Amino acid sequence: MNVTYYTIKNFVLGCGSYEPVSISKWFKSPGSRMLQSLRNRLEQQEISDRTFAHRVCRLIPAQCPFERKIEFFGYVLVSIPPLCKLNPLYEDLMSLRFRALCYLAEEWGEDISQYC
Image (cartoon, rainbow, N blue to C red):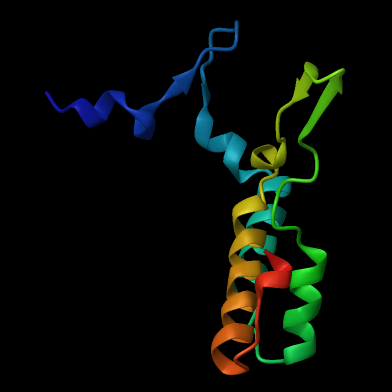
């Protein structure tokens, strides 16, 4: 017996009724198609203009802007974790920013330390 038969390819969720719901139906929703088209557009975006590369580096932050530590007299009271990993486009945006930084450093020989 093959183990892959029981893995994600044939993974089925029970939903309380007698008919199981296949997980592949969830990934064919209009929202996921829209996200996939945005991912494809970000992935295929060419960095060929110096001003566009500078704009991308300024608009996309190097670190997650939502991470916070609330301190009181040097003691951390509350630590809010970075929520960027929950963003479905996070990896694609970081890839676009990295390509823009590489373009500025390799093609124009600029110092990119101001964006790091």
